[in-house]
Length: 149
Ligand SMILES: [Zn+2]
Ligand SMILES: [Zn+2]
Image (cartoon, rainbow, N blue to C red):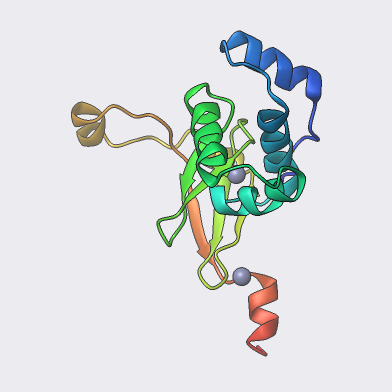
């Protein structure tokens, strides 16, 4: 089952900012809205490319910094793509990811049996667990079609 990100909710966004002591600026609002709209776990650069249409003078660093601030405030999650580029995920409810090994697309899915996977004792003893989710490497339907197979 695939998950759709909830539509952008300006009131929820404002509440989250207030709760975290973040100033609500037009830029920050646009950045968060774009993250939700993209619905594809965008990188900072993908968000920047969209935001600069609206704010031609905005710097990449401003976009990047805002995304990292949202992450620190728990308003989004950072996930690593196969290429090592940081990607951002506004869906905070429990879900898992499929990574297309060809185009790098990251697709959400839910599967209850994966939600409470037991972490081995040896790992728990040594490390503090921050987050756990399952990643399945795939070739997505678009890439499979392009391969002609
Ligand atoms: Zn693909
Ligand atoms: Zn996700």
